[in-house]
Length: 281
Image 1 (cartoon, rainbow, N blue to C red):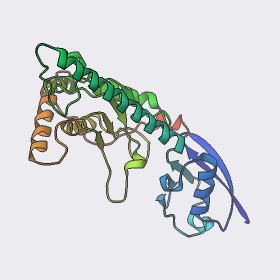
Image 2 (image 1 turned 180 degrees about the vertical axis):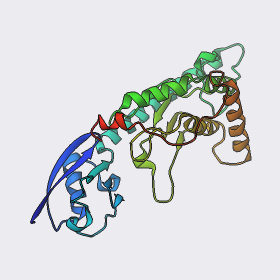
Image 3 (image 1 turned 120 degrees about the horizontal axis):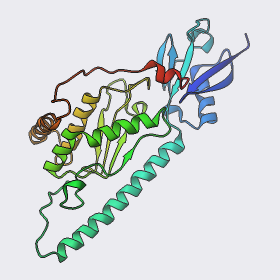
Image 4 (image 1 turned 90 degrees about the horizontal axis):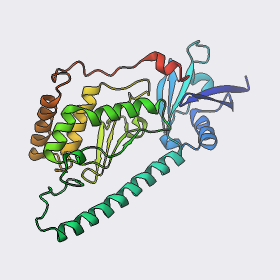
């Protein structure tokens, strides 16, 4: 055969590519970059049933020999974020930072005028002395990934978790933005980033989804990661002070979780196949 017609699934949508049989996975990646505006460096191709996950630099074998074309289960799934979506998220983060700086300046001005100065803690973003402000003020699922409404539900559950609310009020943690992390952008052959705290509590990102986007990670495992990231609102380095505070927050969250009594159900990743089959993923 002189050419191949390949279907690549991205975020539940199939995309068809015509490519020479002698072409390589890099050639296919170049076509994807041109058509979908996803940089080759940010692409991961999940090829079922084998050879599995491939990413840049791609293997040099011809697609006609590399791909299991005769398998009834053959499928190529693209994991990657369009350049415009990345730019939009970066702009959102910059806007939030500017807003936070403006609020910080306003608070400083109010403290100078006040008769009794505020006792807010350094390094922790607080908006006022009201315990209602010790929360996550904005929740942001990634709209370009499948089922963003499920991610929003996860973020809402974390924000409203009785244990999290108790710990945040006790330590006066006020975080402008809680968002989800794109697994493809934070996974390498050496590591998997589970959470990030930017600028000591300005933005907290959490890995909600499984690596292959086929479901969501265990809630209590994500919540434990959130305890870790909240401790970074006070301590940047992973020193003894940081780990002591992390363990303290974990205990406070477990003790404050009156809904489930703090009992651990599972730390396994899980998925609901029906949800994802409906998306064509």
